[in-house]
Amino acid sequence: MSDLRPTEILLSREQIQKRVAELAAEIRRDHPNDLHMVAVLKGAFVFLSDLARYMTGPVSLDFMAVSSYAKGTTSSGQVRLLKDLDTSLEGRNVIIVEDIVDTGLTLLYLQDILRARNPKSLRTACLLSKPSRRQVDVKVEYIGFTIEDRFVVGYGLDYAEAYRNLPHIAVLNT
Ligand code: IMP
Ligand code: MG
Image (cartoon, rainbow, N blue to C red; front, side):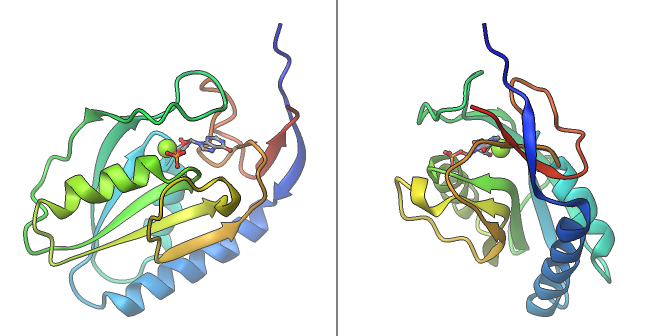
C-alpha cells in the first residue's frame, strides 16, 4: 500500500510567483519581438499560464504532450510523443516551457525534435532543476529554482495525477 502525501512546503506560492515574474521579464528582454512558448503537458500547464500572464507584449502559445514517467517516481528513460504542436516553428523564437528537468532525458528528446523544425532560436525554461539527477548534458537557459533530489508535487507537478492543483511546491514523503 502506498501512502504518499505532500508534507513540507519547499517553495511557497509567493516565492514561486516572484520568481516566475522575474523569468518572464528575463525571457522578454532576450526576445523583445517574436516569442513563441511551447509548454509540455501536463506538468507545465500552471507554470506556462503564470509565465504568459507576467509576460508583457505579444506572445503565442502552443502545447505538446509527452509521457516520460509511468506511475512511479523514477524515470524509465522512455519518452513518447502523445500530442504534437498545432503550429509550425519555422523561423520563430521558441521557448520550451517545462516543469522540471530531472534526468534530462525528456528535455533532450524534445530539444532534438523541435530543433529539427528550423526555429530561428530555441531555448528552454524550467521551473525546477534537480542537477544531481542528471544523466545527460542538456542546456536549460532559464531555471526557476535548483532543488535537491526529492520528489516534489504541486504547481502542475503530480504524483499519479494527484496534487497538480497545489499553489505551492511540496515534498512527497517517500
Ligand atoms: P526527466 O526526463 O527525468 O528529466 O523527467 C522529466 C519529467 O519527469 C518532468 O517533466 C516531470 O513530469 C517528471 N518529474 C521528474 N521529477 C519529478 C518530481 O520531483 N515530481 C513530479 N514529476 C517529476
Ligand atoms: Mg513533464
